[in-house]
Length: 183
Image 1: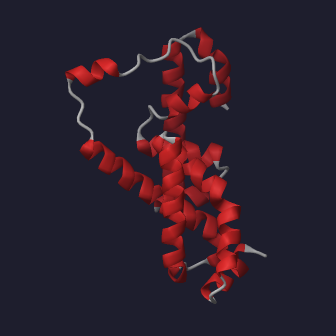
Image 2: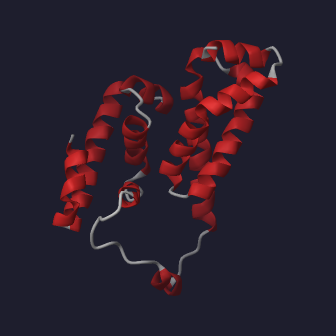
């Protein structure tokens, strides 16, 4: 079944059709949440919240064939809400800062790329994650963010430059990853 047919089935009361949508988009929603939050457990919880919200709001979906982009938008909003809430409740004083780990001297594991991505500002991290990790086109990203395609292209270009700067601060050991980002 197509996404459009599944959404119509859910609107007609077929809960099983929603389970198919969840199976189809769960990994993508979790990945998007993880790349925005940097926390696997929070990403799983936020994905669950995304699907709960989507189930409640599915009648308001204007274009059922774009359910993937719609779910991504819901996940993104929930992630930002989560991050704002976490920022308000986190109090870092001088003693707690000493407990934070020092930045890595080199990149020697693929997972450390995600660590560098998390150092980017939200507006840059979200376009890189959407473009390269979720394989969304510029037009889809623009629709998700409510901005122009040109703005998305500019953000993506600036994000790659910023990521390149982060790699350069790590030295020669990051060279192999720098070549990936330079594409």
